[in-house]
Image (cartoon, rainbow, N blue to C red; front, side):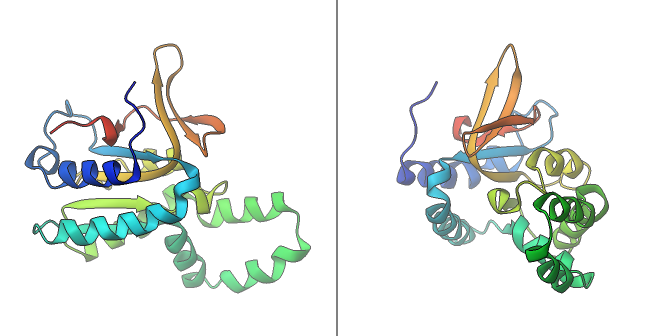
Length: 200
């Protein structure tokens, strides 16, 4: 197990990996989808936003384009485009949390709505790498493993990095687990690589 990287070390590692030819040409993945998880301590949620923006800018200086997508922003766009956002905001104070969750899960269903929206963004902007963030903000009505499972057919050309507030662990007994906020241990996802362990 590698020691936890400091914020600066993580930023440098990500920059080095993402600008490398090995990463950009998807080498060493053994025909797996080019999905990477960048786990970070949930308490660093605000600083990771700045770090990600700095990273996008630094990477752009090397001639590599990042498509920087935030799941929360995409969810708001979908709700607005479908004229549902105002209704949700009006209903929310009077409704049970379970009702709102069920409504949002339906409207923002990854397969039916979220992935087509991501596909639009992918088609609209030239890019070499995709960043996905906002995982914590859209929990529990959008689950990261559902996004990744449904994204496999859409985002297989460019490497995709999911910024994940929590840990991504592999154990022989239980397989791979996305543990959101370091607390919730129920999202099983096996097909991504931990980018913090990726060597160039």
